[in-house]
Length: 162
Image (cartoon, rainbow, N blue to C red):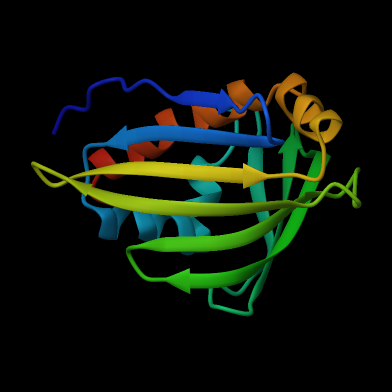
């Protein structure tokens, strides 16, 4: 199966401190959802290609928690953690997302998996943060590279049937 390179749209709202990420995948929602809740799969695709992801805690259920670290050449360069507020199989995930270096900057994210024709999925991530400074800091952090490269890796993983 050949995958087409997809556009990742990252939209920062003007009037509220949000970031919306929209991406389509050539796989059904069940597969895209699984890649978000299975820690072995998640670690293979999340983040930029220059980093590896090490899962340190993962309980993908409503009320569960998660944590992972990003390593480069065996050295930890960033860590993230949060909780799963709601996990609704194949439909949506609501979780908190926190960079350990800014523990007061908690984002509330809603991830939805929309069924498209041809067994495809539109993924939407809506991230709400406390203020524009936090939102703009996230955007300036290189987030776009991590998100885009991560979703490219997810495309590759899904093409292999994951």
